[in-house]
Image (cartoon, rainbow, N blue to C red; front, side):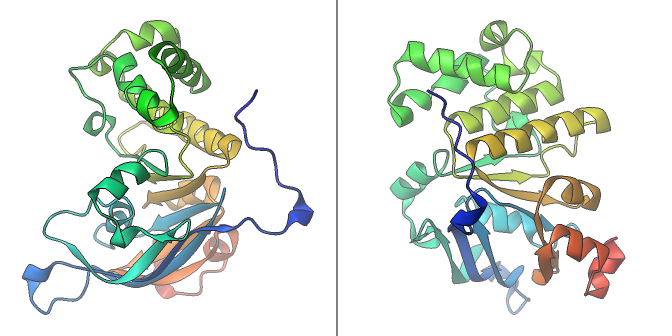
Length: 269
């Protein structure tokens, strides 16, 4: 039986809100009276929907993604707001709850896959280690599921790939392996933080095509963090524009990028 989510009928109405962020404020307490690095940002994301968060370096976009995974640096803290994921506030979770949320609830693809892939473990061991406890599979079932997912992300000779180490692959192939590992857990939300910045244009397009294809097929919502407006226009439905910690504009991608209401968005274009 296929695990692919059935397509919603247009008469079913909009999908439910999966993530609701309200008045999120992030500060670095050691900076005294300095302005918050994320200043009262709010947005909603529906199940299966794709949202880009864009802005220049230092705009706060990456900190929002890390907050949604409980991965803020020690020097930062959430000063106000809430982030309701499937009705539960992520900002009130303890360590045990975060372990349950990361992976199966919210997955993340980082800019550099070697941050997430262990260079000392073979690819197969890394892909199946979370499947056994989280999806109730035995090792054989997990191994076959991982091979099938590697084939879905178009890794050549997936069975041989399972036996090799991450450093034996190119950057683009490592990003495919990481994407396969994240999507194996079937997260309801995928956060992709500049996932292809280090790749050349051709490989970049291949990886992003695969990422969006998988999220559509699985019904996974997507938050795409980027500074590249061309990629935002090509791969997402809605956009949130950040400047110096504040959300200056939000809406459908086509509307915001063709008729920007804020001078800052126009400047980015």
